[in-house]
Amino acid sequence: MKKFITSTFLLMFTCTCLFAQSKSLGTSDPAAKKILDAVSTKFKSFKSVQAKFSLKIENAAGKALGNKTGTVFMKGNKYRISVTGQEIFSDGTTISTYDKAANEITITKIDPSANSLTPQKLFTNFYDKDFLYKLNGEKGINGKTNQEIELTPTDKTKPFFKVLLYIDKSSTTISSSKIFEKGGNKYTYTVSNMNTATLAPDAKFVLDAKMFPGAEIVDLR
Image (cartoon, rainbow, N blue to C red; front, top):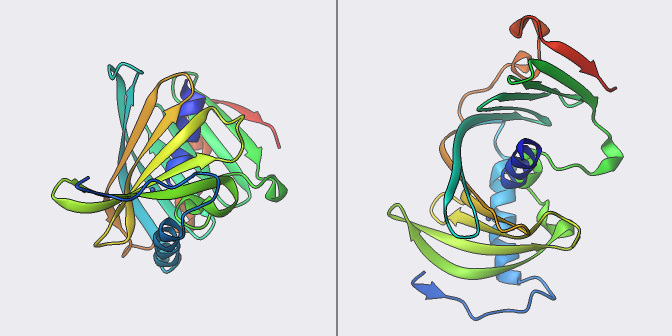
């Protein structure tokens, strides 16, 4: 479960009253692409990003299974994610993950050819190759107009079958996403307090083992 929660978070930091005419998911919707392209263009203009997020997990019946909160920092190809029980650091070359419950640090090397998903890709053009998408319409969320975009993965072996992205129409940024797992669970991520004015130092994206005394280090590079 913990591994899936982490991977679904990365999928996120890549989404009403007026409901658009239903479109086939056999091809992608040009209206949705226009919105996603605008989100991508705006995100690429930021030198660094800091944002808070919350995660709500529900089963198929809508019963709450858990809630988590965290913070993400992004700068260029670097990122750091702090979530309950985990710290994830990526300096652009390696990914280092600290698991508090196990008091363990796992280090892996980034494979450029693996086309792995990163928080940065979620805000840029990840959708062109990995998903088909359509614009469902507009929805009011917390007093703001959001555009709902539905994505379905082209790879049917993925553990999820649908993602709903909600784009804040006024700011052209992703405000929340809902991921539908094949097993019935739903994961809702909500982004808040996005700060694009502060430039994070490079050291923030490097795990220093001294931060976690006594942690076992598993180096898989």
